[in-house]
Image (cartoon, rainbow, N blue to C red):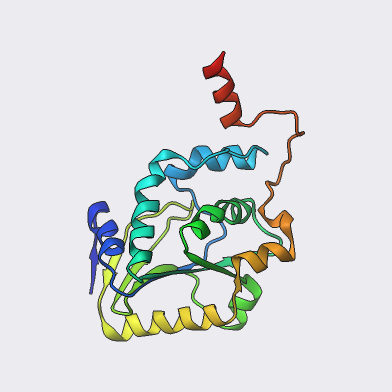
Amino acid sequence: MAVQLNEQEYYKLFRTARKSVRRMESRGNYDAEHERVEREAFLAGERPYERPVRFSTWDQAVRAQRARGVTFEKVRVMDDPLTPNNRFRIWSNSQATRNDEDIRYVTRSRAIELDLPDHDFWVFDSEQLLLMPYTGDDRLMQTLLVTDPALVALHDGWLDLAWANATPYKDYLAEDPTRAEPPIRLPRDVPTVGQSEQHERSA
């Protein structure tokens, strides 16, 4: 049985985890409203020069949990060739790694060979499973909490398998630094959104 969580209940799972927070991210595209401004700027060839303030609460919470010894692990399935959204997420992972989150990548062809699931989910402390169904146009529909031991163990095992076949963020980027580049690249003398706003404020 799955229980639908509201936003407050969803974030509580991250704050109360005792040992581990793990994620499988399988989609090639996501349309998250809270990312839209930064994503569109990146896809247009711009690079927002700083992390939006709204992420500060999340960053602080992750760092606090990491200080307590809670691990944050995420495996992301990457398309070949990379989708624009793949590139945005690789680029945005620089902050996540500064939070000491361990993010790794596996190609979609390898994920298919390993028979990994094609849905997104989180596993907390190997005890709670959070399913994340999406609409056909890439929007999150709901977050569903499952505590059935068999289903939790199945998804935890999938994460173990994906983890063993995934490449860590720094190694993945070192293989090809352009993976974190936007699909469109502006000339160096064209200001980014952040730089333009900064210039306007100082004018």
